[in-house]
Length: 272
Ligand code: ADP
Image (cartoon, rainbow, N blue to C red):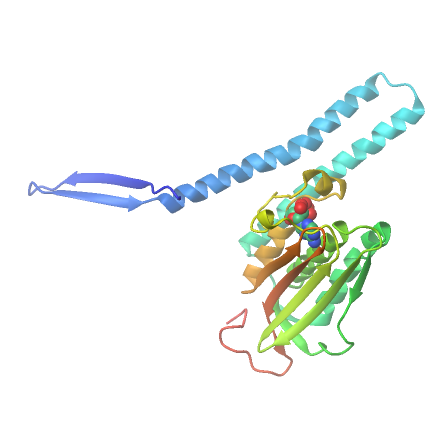
């Protein structure tokens, strides 16, 4: 159960009476705790590759075999890339959380989908996973989302990328969209490893991973889904997941949208 923390302060009045101030600071304490945990997590996440780098550098010191040297240097590059990805994702997350820099403009839905898919094309090819867009051509041509282009592409791109990362070779990731009364729902479905029920609530937390080894092997930072959730919230939307372990997952990103030319409904407009 959440702990209640009270700040109590008493003052004697000139009249002889006493006033007592009781302030509920539980929420402030909770936020402080989340922040402290986050900093500890970041330190840990960066310590791992930095530690590996230093061990690898040491082995290079007395190494003379060119083949071994090349292998070690390759691993060092991998670790450096990993640290750098974590830093990039952290910067992106903090930019999105602050929300200051966003530029809000009308964006055609097909642009978001095409760009997100293009971003993942190379990885999909490497991992031999198919990615298909199930939307009939021109069906969503006139659907417009008001928002930050970069954030939206990043959110959908992260979902498609996860679909690819957590699929076996030969698997298929499908992207679809549905529009109904001012809400567009983007669905990303894979036939991959799925997510155990007990982890479903936690996967949107920063650095939470079901399988650390798998996330690491696929180059994951553990921040992708928290970026997705923040982007959804910034756009007055949400993200949900359905998954069966061993069968696959579907992530649904819902955003306020409208048909070009349609009037915005008051509660669904990003800039209202
Ligand atoms: P990561 O960089 O580790 O992929 P994310 O924040 O994107 O971090 O995802 C958090 C965790 O959720 C992943 O480590 C993985 O365990 C799980 N996950 C996310 N997407 C999928 C998916 N499509 N299929 C199976 N597991 C997934």
